[in-house]
Image 1 (spheres, helix red, strand yellow):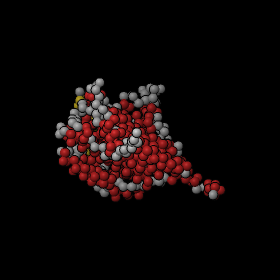
Image 2 (cartoon, helix red, strand yellow):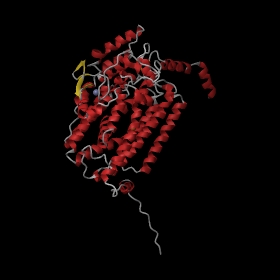
Image 3 (cartoon, protein in one colour):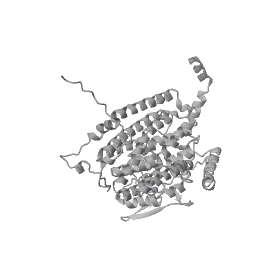
Image 4 (cartoon, helix red, strand yellow):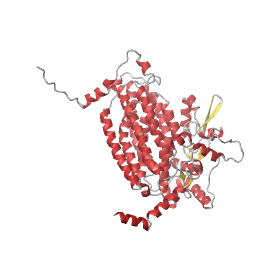
Length: 526
Ligand code: FE
Ligand code: ZN
């Protein structure tokens, strides 16, 4: 007689192994190196892929269940925010410019991360890292979508958010995040993980998400806070992938150490330069301030990062080369960046303004070494000009760094009165850099960086005009035509905040919200 077979329930670890690693196999019809052509050319030596630790042990069915629950909660908040006209509850219409910077410069990186992890996930020989990368790829697509959905509500009420994808490919300041990520995902899979999972997500991510999300909370934007938390809950998995990848490479072969060190040097510096945009947002664009960039840097980079590199010292890894210069820059970069955007906001897609008196006071207190001495008088001078109806817009385009693509606005380490500029020659051409570190990155892979699509060079070469104009013709305003090519509505999407349509509308809505007839309507609804 047949005996009923009792189904054995698998333990968590067994179940994970069955549903992930056991699905991988050694190819026999084709050589493994042909099937996975990219995970050796970077020079990283792996002897035993089974040593890869998967700390989360998440299977696909559990993954979809968790993510589905998160999305349900998030979309309930977004709906409530839209139905209650949440945009009227924010601190001040200036705040929305931080969101514009986010949807223009950060959200497209989520999409790039989605593509990058899908590619990396396909090309690792080890099944553990492959599964983790593919889950992260789906996470990143979700991040892009939730951000686009949340911020689309603001797009109905404010300028500067209607064409973020087109702008990401065209606009000068968005070339900074764009080139960062394109550099990362055109590297090999190990460099990609070192760049994005380790240097950016493990070392620097708190400096991106904490300021934006606590900034949103302080300024009454609960919709953004919610997508932020929803994305941050994936982040712990992403950070683990980053640190695991570094430790795995370092443990597998001593020859990997110098390669990994060079990547850490490079990607720390590229990440730090990219965060200039966040520094500026934090110190200048939040009507209700959270903490200064300098304080955030001290907390998240200096103390947390310091401990991390002490821990990695046992593998022979030292802190990144640019570390000291980055720490020195904490007193300066936000002011230098805002000064630049203030002068060029007629060519950007968000508004700028002069900080109010109490905000200047806050900056003096937070930056006792630098603000009053180097940056306050320039802002006051521009403020005077604006009051005389002569708002200053710089009509000359700046030189850009060949590596980070930021205009030459940074100063020499140790001398904030002198612009930092480096140059080098490659195949008879001269190339310019903002720092020793950007120059060194170039010199290691010149054939990669000579291809950079530098927005200012492209404007001067005539590549950024709409097809229906002749840039030679007298009377055409070059900036106006470049904006038309960008898809930016000059004077509406950009320029001075004080005289903007955004400000005018927002003030009007608030006035209207307090009008008696509105109250009667509310009374009637009771
Ligand atoms: Fe993400
Ligand atoms: Zn640079």
